[in-house]
Image (cartoon, rainbow, N blue to C red; front, top):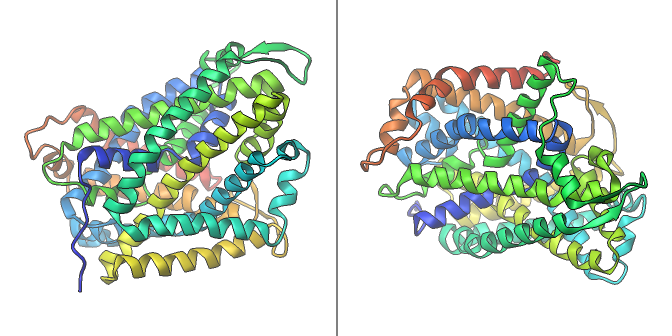
Length: 464
């Protein structure tokens, strides 16, 4: 028997759940690194412009598709147009590939949180601590099981009692923690490895002041591509999540207002992530300390910074990693929900059956990924030149290939096949105004597809 389709109890619940999906590991460890790498304020300005244009276009399109069809991504695209059903399948593969390794990284964060709570927290700053942990056989799998289990439990409970209820608790707490750490980061003073005494405000200048010195047109293009790639992480588009969440939104909700609130919340958190991390790293490691990216920034650079803070570092480290756990959990549960919602619509399974079976599959894949750092270790050079192993390969396929393909196809479907009026009518059916209407049409028909094609060609190593 088909289950009655769930829905968010309120517009506020939807905004918090969608914002929770957007605020994840990508915002906290990837955004600050890219901002530091791409000229600080230069990256910020370009990112904000793209968020208000490119990001807005994809976000409003996906949420509208979900609410209009009342279907998740796997079946929604086919319902809009029979020849675009394959897009829903590819969009469903993205969260399927992401979930196993995302929960592994969530397990790494949990491991560090426990380490900071314990008495030997300073060991996390030692060279080789992170590598020693992820190359161990059993512990990474154990922490993966714990984090994945928590994610499955939330989705098992459903949209109202699981996703929305937890989001209402975690998101306000998460925001307070981020603001608190950001304020603290601006008050610190210390001597970096280069012997220079700096304050948090010195680090803030590195983050905020644009640096165009020596930047060519090609360099600006790279910044644009970096910022656009970051938006996929930041607003959770092109992976089915916003289509699935949109399908749970009531018809009488103000869709444009909700999208605007999600934009504001996500951009604010991404900005604060930079305020929280960049000044701290610059004070204790110098500007070159921001050269660490991805796991290196989170699990190597930050523990070294906390260790240099002395006794206060333990407390700040505990709050920091607890905050990251919350951010990772709100994102991982949205990734799993996209998969479960798709399975329920496609195969008419119950929520509980879909959540448990997908959880088991994610665990099996996750074990293989964990072993990719020891027993199954190998190196493979990706088309973009990066040297990768199993986790990196899954990340590359999902984020660098499938997500741009889904986004391009969505733009073609909405811009040229069913026409932008399909989304505009859905957004305005309750009498609301469609802000940025002209901009939306231009973006979805022309600008966004061109940018996305460039991003895809860059990921494939065709454009360098």
